Length: 401
Image (cartoon, rainbow, N blue to C red):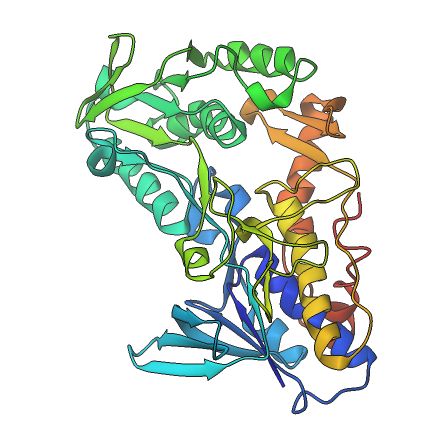
């Protein structure tokens, strides 16, 4: 029997850990139930931190962890999925093609930034979505440091006033001074189509975010969007033109394209609809998890968000349930009633909320300490020691806040 997991992000990593955990609990040898994880690199990209400087350091190795729990790592990219014959075609690192059969498939392919067809966006826009994107932005900023001060050089426009956009914008003043010199006079502008900043955060956190933006000198343009980009500026839908060499796009996510190969229903974000055990509806043998799945996380109609917090726990349930079906033991319905957010606000600290109503629990430096612990400890892989790694993947305890 074989489980194939596609993707080594938070959901894929915990799917592998959890499937191996249940296999170990049931006393089944790895040769009897093979768990294969497929990804281009044997690393976890710490994606929630890609708004920071030095993004090339924001990865964590997975190979030793996978070896410790007897999960087979296959370096490559899944090109096609055939759900009728239960097989995937993989292009390996050497560009050779390989077809692997599966008994259960777990799609943990994550999400990608949605880039609309705005003139100039593809040529001149940056992002902090994927590792390569964040590295390109970092190199761009260092290249700008070689130029003399100017409005174009010293201005950064962030398109999108949601979670990612706010973190990128509030980090930027200190980051630009560190790059351009302490006497630099950076200008940062958030452009948001909604009439308020942080529209999804609610009325409680919003004034705190607004105060932080004011403290940092971050400007906002609300109720407008980006009309076009060029090499040295961006035009807004209200006719305003801002001189800048740096536009960071942070508006909207979509499930990775591979989900389209599964003959099943998807939502408007491309996420596959799954049942409470994270099985893809109407397709036998396929599970989806993390940003690839639209899943109910409680009995009140709340759906999991495209976030590390939800992906991690969803991955643990998907891995457990895929293994449980093959081993003939009961599955566990995914649930994640607890929900917190910890928003980095750069030099202004951070903001910690609890619950779907975003009740503010911590602000400023206290919240910043928690954010640092989340970003540097909680979301990293477990130790590459078998017992500790397997213990970390109990679905009922993963991301239990």
